[in-house]
Length: 604
Ligand code: AGP
Image (cartoon, rainbow, N blue to C red; front, side, top):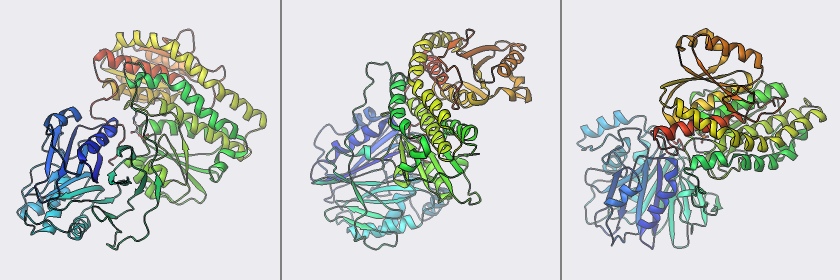
């Protein structure tokens, strides 16, 4: 999704900016741009493209770009279509002020009317442009030759942001001032310090490898990256004690498909090893709540699980394990729908987010002040920094937009937490705990077997069903979250309409959708006999039943446990991932980068 990179140093800015943008690419975007500021009074040069980095490269000057200050952006459209005119950076009326922005402004319409009435000429549909004009109005009059002082730009950015409502991480550069000015509110922004340069980015991945120290802007901070850096808090006072710094993480390994046709294929394939790694880190710490105690967390009776999308389905599995094994009625909060609830003492909030950057999750967490545990694949993320403790998924980078190995590891992490809590509360005998530990230990092998068993049949099925416009995905009990997750894979990758629901709900309305040949993907789960009854009800009305499970009658076989574990038929999701991916390939769509979507959803 939207990403910011800024550079101010002694070397040309453009290579560092482009490298940063390319590292942020996997998050998903639809247009991009850079602004280079020579800092000597010559104009700020802005280059933008609708599309991805190769499109931007095509409009950049071939050589001779020596500006050592610049800002850059990848945009995921919110206000206005993904066109060149709407791509960042945005400039004011005179091209003096250039701005890149992550976040959304709630008062954009009102501001646009105000600025237009004051004579500003707007040239895009994008809320960000309004910031450039607001800064302009607070800076004027600026003559093109003599640049403003850093203090004047800080004051103008402060005055502009005081007028805004919504969320923003901003990087601003102004003609005649060899500096970048940063501001943030409800959207993350980091400063990365190197020996002879300073960068800013919305994500640590955007930094050059030479960055050694990372500091985060606090809410309302305004920072100058220039000859003399300046750091100001939300009251405008200089921050004399530097914001806490941390060593930069070693650069992530370059994206590598490992010989697979696409990242999604590799990441489906990675799952047994990823699961094995996660289980190895948690399994020895289940007894008596050690997993939670090691993280410094309480082992109380109240749990709130917060997440979106696939992560919310992993949270649902966790809630089920908490209910059935620990007797704890955990609440699953869909982050985008969160509201403050009556404060219950001793609640532990667990946020599931593979990216740790999901704006809906971060915003939802403003509602509560309980101890917070992040279950995330990104221990450097904004969520991780905000949390009291972090349980890392450790499944390695996931580049495909569709969650695959991060989902299965979230299920395992959540289940381990639930089992550990159950043990802490005395709800599990030693024998029962050992039984669950054994079941957990068998998961990687069953995943590997399912991978082998299901890939071929899923491919054949995809060939037969790819052209079908609509599907039903269903299951019962512990299988329901996996039916939902499989349905989400088909929607987001293959662009097929899918109704996902518990099988018992069909007769309460959606059964009317079934006609001759309607494909119904049935994820086998206990109680099998009840699910079979529902299957017969659908078949009687002409549905084409497709069984995903361990039975001999399965269309896509799954290596399931003899006794269903409390986290249900997790392995079935691998078969469903194969089916979604093969359908997508058959239809000729991009498996890794589905239309309209982003890997990190950084807007609310
Ligand atoms: C699913 O394939 C998606 N990638 C999506 O639903 C995702 O799970 C959701 O956007 C939440 O993302 P997060 O885990 O990074 O918070």
